[in-house]
Length: 271
Image 1 (cartoon, rainbow, N blue to C red):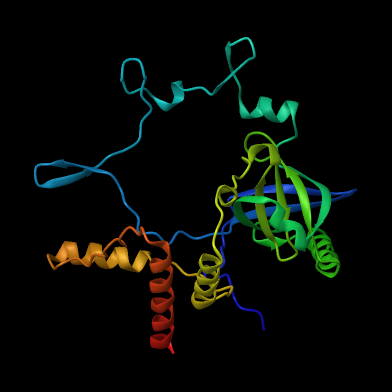
Image 2: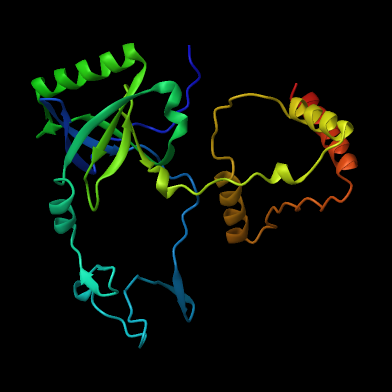
């Protein structure tokens, strides 16, 4: 049995929809949020005597600082000649791709999906009309995902939702990952190319990697409970838990050895 990586409950309300175009087959689909917020939520307030009043968000004029109504705000794009022109979502769809259409461009081997930079994740299912499944759409979607699973591929789709068309990867389980195009990803640097390391440094560094462990763990948010505990303690007037920042290391060999010893000791306590 595979290790579970999705621990949040399944969503039950779609936030948008599109029609998937697979050759001459069209499949109405709904999109659900694929992630759940685990961080402690903060809101902005202003103190009014002993009371707190929640602060809202309003657009302001940058030249005067005056608050203006949202309905007065337009979205403009700059032309090559420097002029700013109004550009609506409808105009973007008119010159690129119809809104709500997802064109299946290609199939990508599952093993190659790591070559794309994920931007956001959602979930796709056949669209329901008044809570009822469209049998034809449901069967077509099931056929597509069944073949994808057998071929070990994901579908690369070009989709226009709000704004310009974007690319996404649709997996056989319905996972829908919006991805960034290559020209939107900055080239990585190679800091290791600037240094020469001794044999002892490489040996200790390798030993530290092994001591920490090589694994693919199921990750859960262990920060949110700590922050909530801090908030609860602060609210009740109790001493709030704090954590000390690690000291800066100058002697890398000594720091590596100390790290190895600490990692081994930590594993011994867990065991």
